[in-house]
Image (cartoon, rainbow, N blue to C red; front, side, top):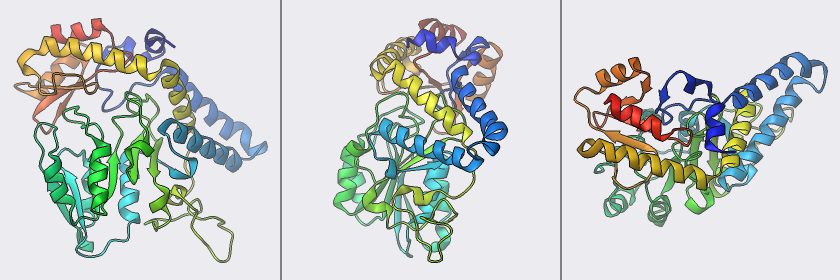
Length: 366
């Protein structure tokens, strides 16, 4: 599949120039149709055919396998969630915290990586915030911060600067202090290759509705097998246990113990289709095109650029006198970006479906 073919599949792009994939990717028709077709089958056919529950559970199993293969994991290391925030919250609720435990997070985290740790305050968990500089992390400061910590939470690609953090090196430092690592990886799958075993993190939370261009409601959580079986879900349901009809209940092995109960399988059918489309284009094409387009955008922005000048991701942050007013004005002109709370700036997300003409339209509108 060529980028032009993907672009032609995305109806939202007929309505304007879209540079906000880092918030929510516009889904292709094929993705929406996959979700819709399965929803119709699940509601119209399955109840009197294979059964609604068997149809759903077959989809869940297939999704775990496809996501695992896409991330370089094993199916037993994948739990299906609704979103990145959902995955992080499930981890926060499943760790056996004791008063005095320390969670370290950076000052670059999205609220998905902030609120779950705040929610542990009544359990006596201390949250330590590691300061960064324009999306850069000092590894010596990191080593000092995690020396007595239970868990470290950070982005793989920072949502506010677009910098790519050295996750493998960071994990090595944290693990040297017996500190667990949870990566908010949602800005990575779909724009850069991800191998979770190479990263070495204990947890990676992500979702399909950004760079994968999947539907909302299809999240996924990687949990390393060495830590999964020590987790006790904060909320448990029939999907958390090996046999819900057993007299003596036991949790499932691996990450699926963090799944709970009945949820729509349709978004996961959309996610499967989205992953297949990304694979059909290929990461060489995706990253190459994003790099060329971000280079073009950065050259046009000049001194307004706040993200790194050299390519690291498709997230390009730049200065604006009044970010919210600029976003509103550009939207009125058919160009869609977003404002950021920190830094007080705006961000354009450049994906493989964008074109040089899109970039020029943004620069002309500025």
